[in-house]
Amino acid sequence: MARPSEMYPCQMPADLGTEGLAKLLNLSNRLPFDHYSEITPVMAWTAILRHPSVSLLTRPDLETLKVNLVGKVRCYGFGAVVEEFELHDALEAVLAKKEPAPLLHG
Image: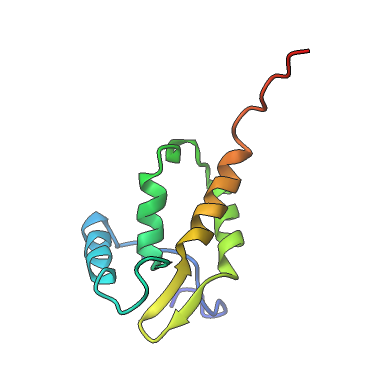
């Protein structure tokens, strides 16, 4: 481990490419959890990347998402999961700050 002082480094392995992520996504669909509410980290990344406004997200936005979600992650014997609605709420909160305020006509 490159940084042993960090208990759980929050980053992807440097050598994990698209093929590896696709394999993780496929494997995560086979895990024994409530598929209607819990998602794995790779499922969360896929949901973020498929969001229509993903191009608006900056590195600080992704950091905000991480900070907002870290306390909501639960760990089971097979790995981490987060409630899907928690991801959507956190993502929508970040994106809401990017949308221009509506003009008031007086």
